[in-house]
Length: 279
Ligand SMILES: [Zn+2]
Image (cartoon, rainbow, N blue to C red):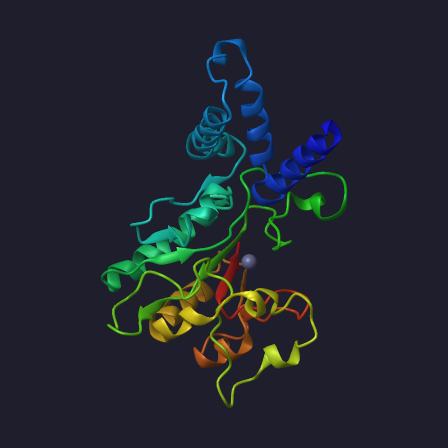
């Protein structure tokens, strides 16, 4: 029984570490703290779970952001009402919303300009980077702790941003995306557009999220090509932004600069549900 418990403990620790980088350590620290003499009154299981949850939130919203700043990464805005916001609070709870200060100021500048031009606009960010670099001398960790499944999101310089959508029934800006996590429901190629998803059929990773994510909410949302184009062409004109990744059919549909906006390889994941920028 002890071996099984130790195994489950380890699996949970590794899972939290993979998803949140430091969540496993936070949980381990909470596990130790709750057993200190001064917490002896916390004896039953539910109180311990409550303590761990409170400790995790304290670390997520106060301690980790302060430490990350010391080590050169800052949190993107975590409020859900600002012009730049996380698509899902899970991104924040999993510490996946950290970038270099320069990237935050560049993105905030672009979002402010767009929000000034369009009342009620919210730009949803998706996965960014973990709070700490934590370079290790092997494999993908050499350049920093990768934020799976995005192997390149390891240096604080990368950010995924969702497209802009309207509510299909009212035509109003929805502030949301068809998929609850931002990934998985794509703007597919239209007839006559280059069909890269078809060309990449056979790749295990390219359409994995798309193929496994329920597509039912797609009909409730309408892609706003005008504002999405303004957003991405703004990024493309900004020389501080080094790379922009988007599927070719959208680069073509939105008449974007093909020199600046690049396609991804079939071995990556498709970029027709979000745009990737990096400095
Ligand atoms: Zn990305």
